[in-house]
Image (cartoon, rainbow, N blue to C red; front, top):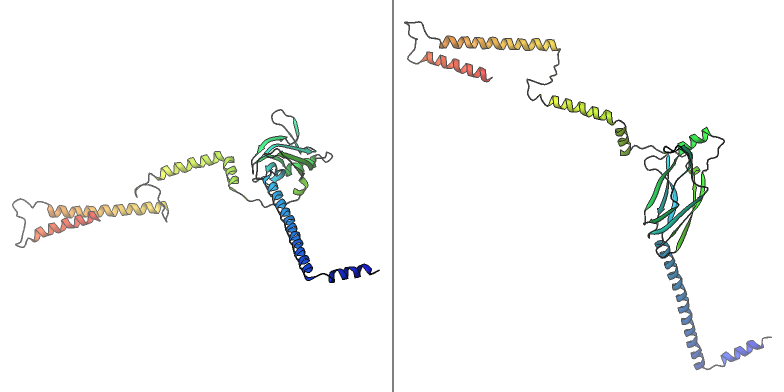
Length: 301
């Protein structure tokens, strides 16, 4: 039974040292070849994976999605966007069932519109470019269901988006859109500059009248350039202030009359035949000069 083992044993132990050296050399060569093959296979797999990833990143990636309107979160937009890094050509969109909206009457031909209008084919979308339209309002859909409880309004839609790259290869993306994911959602209503613009547009006539009134007030106030005109505010009643001002004017007039009488008495001519009394030190002249100084000081004050 073990005869073949003994034959192998005798064969290997019967080899010379040169034979063992030759076998060792061949074994090293075989191990090297195996290592090279294994490394080559690993490198090839890495290269193939990198090439596949590069091709996937370089191809167009066109999808259809639902997105909240940036200004009104209760409205949902239908968006077709190229998220890829290369252009997409000959984009084709289809849904089953077709995208339904809360029925509304067309303002032009008065027909009842029940489905969203969107292009079934788009010739080209650049990287990052999108096509967008308002789909429907969640509030409008809820109100319509309340008024028409027996009529079914579709909420879930399945579709496909196909496109071609620059080499003519076709790429397909499956799409699932569902309105139910937005039901009972809560949002914080934050006012933006857009809301301010809408308020101003709504009250444009009132704002214009207010601007005209402010312009009139500004023109009136601009004419009050000195203390003798304009609008004055007093801490007391108008009658008391008026009496006070009249008293001030009367007292000022009386003081002015007294000063004039004094000056007239000092500057008046003496009776005929009499000489103006003078002294050697010129006291009369100094008295008149002092009176003149008093008048000048009172006028300056």
